[in-house]
Structures are given as structure tokens and as C-alpha cells.
Amino acid sequence: MSKPLLFCLTPVKNEAWILERFLKCASVWADRIIIADQGSTDGSREIAAQFPKVTLLHNDSEGWSEPVRQRMLLAEARRTPGPKVLLALDADEFLTANFLTSREWCSILNAQPGTVIGIQWPEIEVNFSDLNYFYYPAILPFGFVDDGSDHEPELIHGPRLPMPVGAKMLALTEIKLMHYCLADVDRFRSRIRWYQCFEYLASKKKPMDLYRFYYKIRFVPSHAIAKVPREWVQGYEERGIDMSSVIRDRTYRWDRDVLEYFRQHGARKFKRLKIWDADWTKLRDELYPEEACKGPIDPRSKFDKFVHRWLESTQPDFSLYANPSRSKRLFNKCVEKTLGLLGW
Image 1: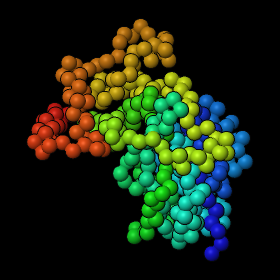
Image 2 (image 1 turned 45 degrees about the vertical axis):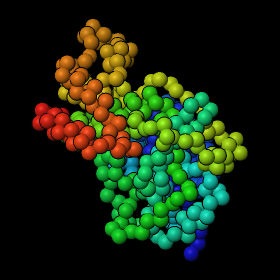
Image 3 (image 1 turned 120 degrees about the vertical axis):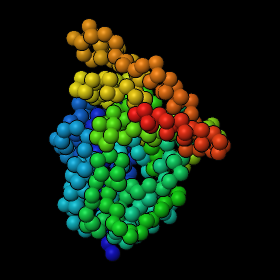
Image 4 (image 1 turned 180 degrees about the vertical axis):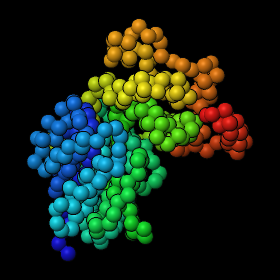
């Protein structure tokens, strides 16, 4: 069997803060990088156009749609004949540089068509020039040795590539996928505020369930955090790629999108969501100065604010590394059940 081509499939919308680093790293291992850009206005398209391995697609869909972008990326990759390995990465996700020396890389190249590639997904924190990480315990499917299988995308947070029934998974243990979403904590918080609003409208999930899901990684004990091993970044840094600096522009597209939800549905609809750590009145006045006369935005009652404080105080018991006592777990569940009956 001939050596497969390696494809990196990446959706982009206003990722200039990290895109150049991503493309430099992906260019080390990928034969082709396919970018589906959804109307970026921050220079992302111009950055992507500078890299010879990039094929730049225009995603003109309105709003969030993982199915549209995933089908677009997959279809473009399949225009190239022959065997191929597909890795579906976001712009803030980086293969650890030890792929350059790990035997696992050969196992990827030699895997049979139809094989799903599973990778651990450590979260990366940037503290000045220090890189720290902690793990999601699961091995997640980010790659696929293409066999032409159909792909049935989900609206949000679903598999990015085909996962045929009964497919074999090649689970990597040395090579990781570093997730830089916590490199800019304010950006991360802006994004999960928007995620909550989107899912609340799209799927009618309960506010409490959305909070428990999206805020799991905010409560990680210090003993679970470690320094990033040198071999995860060394191969990139030896090629002159900066793996530790962060561009923080402090303005995030998700804040504008949430304000647009407020305009469409009214802020009151979202009062139970844990999105009120942002000063929405100030953000509105900055982005829409013509609306500054409308007064403050915070429709929560005292009870709503109390529930949000309770959720935050108990979230460590629901975090990735939690092990609360049985009595504490039962008490929290009883309170949650009661709140659920009240619409939470």
C-alpha cells in the first residue's frame, strides 16, 4: 500500500490570535491543510493564504453549523485520489511535536482504511513563558484513515469525521493533541457564554446542565496540573515556532453574538444561564453606543443570583477530578432536582 497523504481539516472564523502558529505547526506534518473560513474579519484569511500547503475554502453559511463545515472539509479532501489520513483539528489544537520521533506516527501511516484515530486532549495553560497542562481522561476521535464512509455530523460537539459502526480505533498514548483554549482565559469564558446561549436555544438543554458541562475545567486541583513535557514542543521550537506567547486582543466575537441574542430574544430569556460574569451593559455601550440610553442589562432576580452562587460553590464536586462523599453527592443531587422543577 502506498504511503497515505496526511490532511489537516480545520474550520476557521476569526482565529488570527493563534492561526499563524497553528499553520506553522500543521505544515510540519501535513501534506495538505484545508481551511474552511466562515467570513473572518480579523485577517485570518490573509494569514492562511501565506502558507503553500493551505487550500482556502469559503464557508458562506450563516450562524453556527458544524455539519456544513465538516461536509465541506471532507468533500474537498476526497477530491484528491489515493489513500489518505484525515485529522480534523481546530485552530487552537496542536499535535505534540514528539510525533517526529514516536513509533506511533508509523502506526498512523500504516493503519488500515476505516480506522478511527483516538488522541488524548490535554488542556494547555500559558503563564508568561511557562506551559502547563491537565488532562481530559478520555481518548477522543480526531482522526480517520479514510475509506469513503459516510459522515453524519451533529449540530454541535459531535464527531468531526466518519465513525463507522464497528470501526477499529487506534488509540495513541505518546502523541497528544494540545488544546490551547485556556491560553487566553477571557477568550475561553466568552466562548462558553456563547455556547450556553446557543445550546439553550437550539436544544432546550437545562441551564444547570449547561453550567455543569461547560465549567468542568474551571475547577482543576493544583495536583492535577503539570509542566508541559519538553518533547511536546521541542521539535516545533527547534524550527523557530513560538509555542508560548499569546495574543490577547480582549475583544471577542462571541460577546457580540450574545448581545445579538439579547436583541432578538430579550436578555430575560437567558437570565438562568451562567453568563453574567460579563458586564453586558458596558459591552453593549461599547459595541452599540446608540443603545446606551436603554439602561443596565441584568434581568436576574435575587434568587437567580443565589442559584448561580450555589452552582459555582458546588461545581468543584462535579469537576473532572472530583470525588465528593456520598452524602454530599446525594445532597447536591436533591437540590438540583428541586431546582430542575423550578425551571433550572
